[in-house]
Amino acid sequence: MEAALVAGQLVPGDVEIAGGKVARVGLASPHGRGLAVPGFLDLQVNGFAGVELAGADADGYRRAGQALLATGVTSYLPTVITAPEEELVAALRSVPAETTGARVLGAHLEGPFLSPRRLGAHPPSARRDPDPALLERLLAAGPVRLVTIAPELPGAHELIRALLERQVVVSLGHSDARAAEAQAAFDLGVHSVTHLFNAMRPFHHRDPGIAGAALARGDVVVQVVVDGVHLAPETAAIAWRAAQGRLALVTDHTTVPGGRTAEGVLAGSGVTMIEAVRNLLALGASLEEAVTAATAMPARVLGEREAGRLDVGLPADVVVLTDELEIARVLVAGDDRVS
Image (cartoon, rainbow, N blue to C red):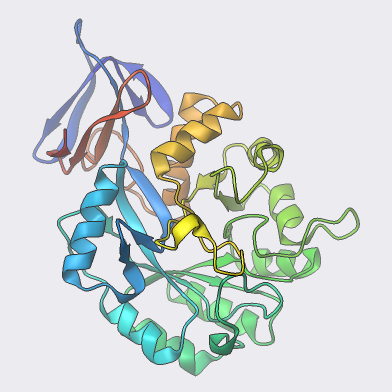
């Protein structure tokens, strides 16, 4: 390798891997080619390679996980959107503890505790106001790692506190919250926003809503879909500049054709993480910033100490990029999975 991205900084030289972990960095490599970066981490994957993860079995997770590896994603959260309770429980029970593809770090439960005014493609009939008993049943069904919730709903603060006490990450989204309501949730300990600007109260100069409240704070990571569709380039650039150092790329990848419902409502995207990295670069981010947005920042949302980082002693989940930012190799725990 010519260089490696270590703790957000480019370090010239090669990387040595031993026992599935990074042993040394900065090794002499006079003829090395390529840039070693941490494996990408995606917080929001609804479906991939034709597999809808909410209804996937073990083979479906295997196929989706293998296809994700080819895009540089070595760990991710399968995302389950608003649905009737029995479907949510079945989907969460199907999340595998282990798989041969990209690592599954737990599930992202995007709903059902969302605003009826900001549902997007989520089915209105399955939306629920915060319900502690329902939440407990969902948490018992599977490895919920992240929950998106509308903080202005009655009882939302009770659920937020319960989730944080269980060390489940909370993100604000699909919400009509005013800025003050968002600030109250952030003060409770919420430090993330789901697909910034999408499915939330629009920014207004006297009430900037969740988006403005999040961008104005230094302790909130904003998740952004940079696919050229979810946000205008100018909007994405504003988000990157305002939240520099705390912007996490997500793909919101889906199997829905064109990423829209029959009514034309956004229902996810078809962008891959490596494409999102290139798109962020095109907006003016540096290579280090763009890769960090796909690695260390989503890891920060989850409180992950090992995923999304490349450093001595950490698992060797590594993506090797060419000078053209094409994926040349993908390693998981030091094993070549894509080359």
